[in-house]
Length: 165
Image (cartoon, rainbow, N blue to C red; front, side, top):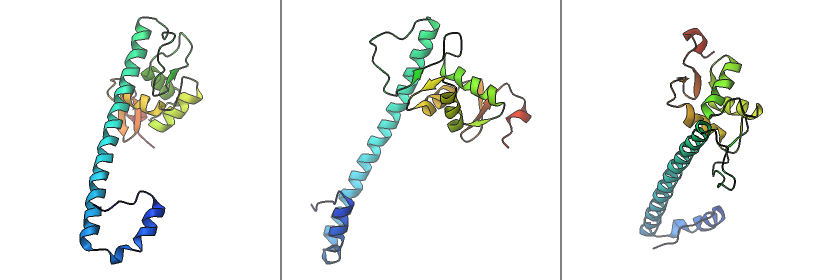
């Protein structure tokens, strides 16, 4: 089976020799590349599912700790998502509450990305995957309503306030 170029430089170097290659050799290389691409896409899909599951588990653990009024256990493994609760006691505790605080302070529907930036700026959350944590927390939450793709509002707002300008 022909070797598939793995870098741009290798592809450029070997592409000049391709016109002289037999059609069957090129087709075999394309078949190999197609199978390799399918495997990579499958692995990416699995990774996305694992990231989503990790986000759900992290949100559950944070909510359970709040319900039990327990701080995170010392020595507990750090979340692979890097999300950390930074809100002081007595303020918002869950990711959904952080989203509510941001939407209430803005008074209008917001893009998820803008909500994540506001949550970081207000010091409510920090980490690498704040946007994903927010999406997971508010997607099926009854207090939030998706008014357009990627734009959310509070369900309690009147229809006029939910309109996206």
